[in-house]
Length: 342
Image (cartoon, rainbow, N blue to C red):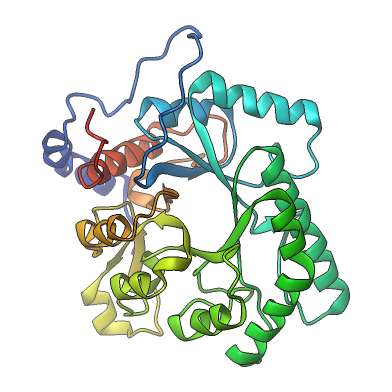
């Protein structure tokens, strides 16, 4: 369903009541622009989930995250943030983290060198290339002082869950585990349905965990992907509570009139939203995280077109519309997290 510009403005106006209820007044801008300030202390470590946002790297985006109240960022591998950067570039990234008071919580290494990393690629040469690329991603994560790197689970077209899980376990044990142990880093895959990510439903990931009991391997859990598959995200998270290593915070809206016409194999009957503007019961989901004592990164993944504008994520500064989406997401989520109201 195509949104007109006027429709988007009307949507934002309608959201004004939500903003006011969540503590907003006037503009949604998180802080005033001004001269360079002294370094900002990192948020203290707590026993609760670390509320962050997912982004590509830039010092401006780190500064925005801090101004908006987030504890840190989860950063995607990209042009200026990848395993091939020099030690001096690493130093600059860490300096930006210190200067902005924004913790780099973890690294997302789904793609490298313009290719998706498929750990179990059926082509031996392509698999070797993917394995080597991901090992570089683990080392890069360590160089940044992070303890978690996100991934896909890989995929073999036409193969069963059992066969793919078996091959993933072999790659993990032979290739990745020695490096993860050496650097004290853990890895996990996001349950995003795509060709190079087979373990996106409970039946598949339970098989993986049976074959990989080592706790250096777990899930980067995103409840939004389960909603559009009509799978209960709360029970799914609870059932693998001891393997939850990172969380994506994204909502899903299902447009019933469209679904009624096109069915689940049609298009445009669901879309991703910022937390609080879809179907997920966030108090219930976060209660699961609190109940299990999860204190890793829980990062807002912004894929909501209502709260975005060009150039989106592809510039050093977010456009104001995208900032507004992140700010509203933070204001909504913080009310369910202890020690987040100051």
